[in-house]
Image (cartoon, rainbow, N blue to C red; front, side, top):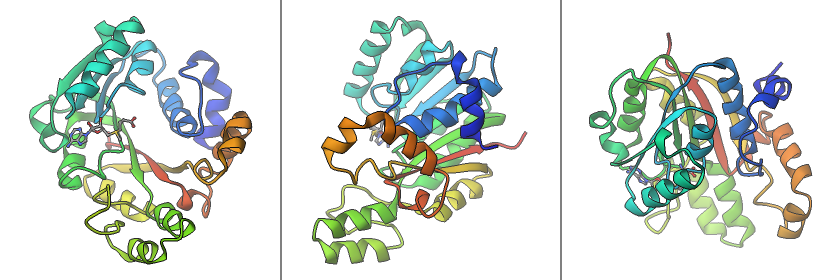
Length: 255
Ligand SMILES: C[S@@+](CC[C@H](N)C(=O)[O-])C[C@H]1O[C@@H](n2cnc3c(N)ncnc32)[C@H](O)[C@@H]1O
């Protein structure tokens, strides 16, 4: 039985936000961890957590969440959102750089760390991942979301930019040169190796947005529930997983 199957049996207790094709797979994985720790008030750290799309629902579920983000505007929006949701007392906004995380968070104090869509933009991902591990208690879990290289290459090709697609597919960084908006993209093996090198045990890898970005908007919007189900069905299965726009890795600091 997979984590996604298990959560089907347990998700009634934590409803969380409405599931969308962009978030359903991630929430399924996170819900399973929350259910595993049911009854505990977790200490959560969301690095690059932005406006709180994950932080606020986790706070609503009763957990204490610290969001470290470089953007004051994002943190202001997070603070408003937390207040509107009635969880201001469980959400702490810290302006800071993921590259300097070690100085912002007490070592071995965190049960669950989120690092979503950040490792693609920081100067150097290895020290950031090392800092995530340092922040985690032994046995604590990491939810890491990174951009997928294959989907980006296919996307460029489908838009007619075959030279860019070729460069992107061949580049060890998974980027298309200096004009690329991201500094790096990953395949599943490279992303897993990054986490393993820092001492994390990778437990699961899922594709996020296997189909969502490929479908015409009328289909994606008109059949959202069916699309969510299909994304969940394909998320763990290569080759679909490996063509997703993003790769989600769930890993743990050994106890
Ligand atoms: C694409 S957004 C992702 C937001 C959120 N994690 C999510 O998945 O919805 C990237 C976030 O990372 C923040 N960020 C970018 N570089 C950062 C850095 N070096 N340190 C901390 N946060 C950073 C940005 O301000 C932004 O809020």
